[in-house]
Length: 487
Image 1 (tube, one colour):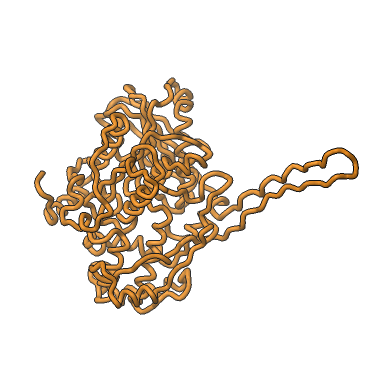
Image 2 (spheres, helix red, strand yellow):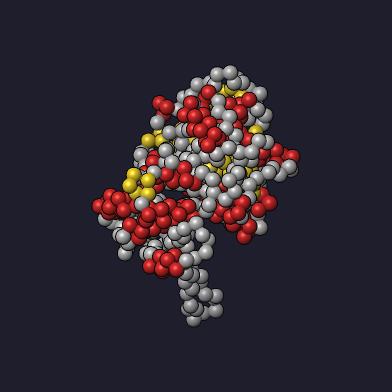
């Protein structure tokens, strides 16, 4: 999500030209209207990507049910498919997260693969046909693979009925893809149309383009508090400014802040979801530097999202900045909000299109199937506020009955245990198949979110050997330092 570039053309108007009468009694001739002009292109459309075919083969999972495993290339995307011999007739599509801007395409295997196989599910995953933050490609290519599932199986020598249930899960950008794939606007406008029965977005960009607004707000607040206020956008000399901005805000980045840095910390807290457990560790804890470096790495960019858009879409016009932990607006905060540079994005940068999905499909929460999402509380890269934005959209659309959200007491991006992911998936499936809506967390009430025990209900610190010792050590230390009440 690092560099954003581009320009856009206006929509063409389509007219109907009528010839007048020629003096005789014959009716006027109508000329067929000209076809609409093609949609404009963008930098992303001219890039060439190549599937890493040597990396497509994958081995059977030890101590798992016997399965058929297939891989190949479909419409420029790499894919992997696994179908257990005792298939239950249901297919789970997995959407991977952001894979950078390189030209090589790779497939990612779902982290709950063992659970899926043990319970009879088939799964399939696409590399997508393009890298960068191309959610449009992610939705279309994942859908295309789902549509090709039985054909590919037949070509590989196994005859299968069409899946009786289709579910979609995904991490990070893949969470955005999973949410967009079940959204009514995208169901109507996608070229490859698939109606999933349920979705599990994990650490997902559920606020879609509002994520980029957050990056810009963080940057402009940092500049303002450091004494180097932005005066235009994008900030083209950011590489030169960054060391001075950091020095004014941190004695040690990001663990030790100056007085002005403390104000920035409070600002970021409220931009990312408000007072809540795990925020302090996510902002400046012992492992926070990697995520903070990633977030700061977006600074200096514009809002064309690495050529996915042709115009800058970022806007910070309506954001309220807070400098302390008091929700009331102080005189200092009034002055700060009045003086900070406001980025004004182009409202047409991500408009509806005639050729399929928006360039960045929306997660409007126009949903009619079960959606169970999970999100870590300390994540500053794709922050917990994404869940709050999505819930407000669901409330506004009258679709909250289809949404369950769960807070997880993690401090990084997508650092879930497998147990937490499995629980969310199983809850979604049981809801969809049996009509039993699962429990979730309230995400909009500040008093609830600020509770020291918030996130305890669905945090499961059980870590298997497959997940590695690092996550186990991290979760053990978090549980010891910030214990939850005994169940």
